[in-house]
Amino acid sequence: MSEELKGKSEEELETTIAEAKKALEAKRREARAGTIAKIKELAASIGVTVTISESNVVPMKAGRGGKVPAKYRDPATGDVWSGRGVQPTWLRKKIEAGHSPEDFLLPEFKPQQAAA
Image 1 (cartoon, helix red, strand yellow):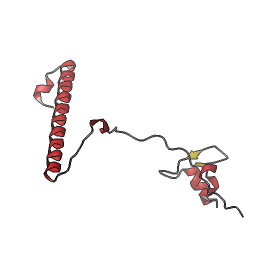
Image 2: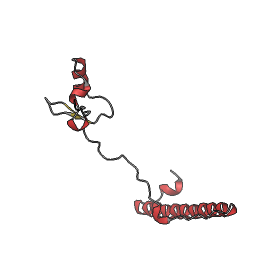
Image 3: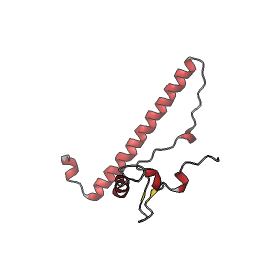
Image 4: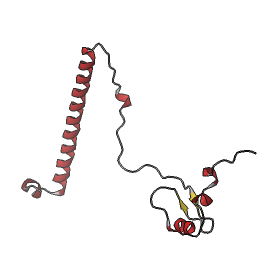
C-alpha cells in the first residue's frame, strides 16, 4: 500500500475508491466511443454503413450460471446428481456393484423406446 493511502481514514479511502471508479468508467466510455468512431471510419472507407445500437450492449455478469437440474437419482436414498462434475460416491458404488449409470437416469432423460 502506498504511503499516501496509509494515512487516510476508511471514509477517505471509500471516497478515493468511488472517485477512481468514476474515472475508470469515464475512460472506458471514451475508449468505446473512440473504437466505435474507428469502426465507422473504416467501414465508410470501403463504402459500408455501420449502425451500432447502444441498446444491444449488455454488461457481462461475473459468477456462475444457474443451477443444473438433477439427471440421476438413487431410489434408495433420494440422492441426486446433475451428471456434471465428479461422479458421486453413491453412483460409483452402484456401478462397481454391477449397475449401469442408465439404471439411475430420471425418466425425462431416458432414451425413448421405439414402438415394435
